[in-house]
Length: 107
Image: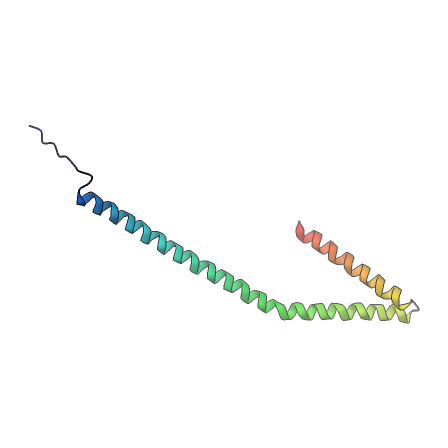
């Protein structure tokens, strides 16, 4: 004698089981999304803090570079070079350095 067990997929047990699996999967995905969101927020916050910390030294460096350029131009004027030639030559040199640095950074 063989006993055959029939399963009705429309019965409440299967639907309850499937609903539980879906709920568990939804909860697991929610936990992973929350963890990922927290990690991204932490990284963005850290990057923002580093950027803010770099702004003051970067601003100071820009002012120092500007003053050095003016000092070099003033030295050229003191040697007899016309003011406009000294300033333009300084601008060309600084532009060339900036372009070279940007190209190197792009590699």
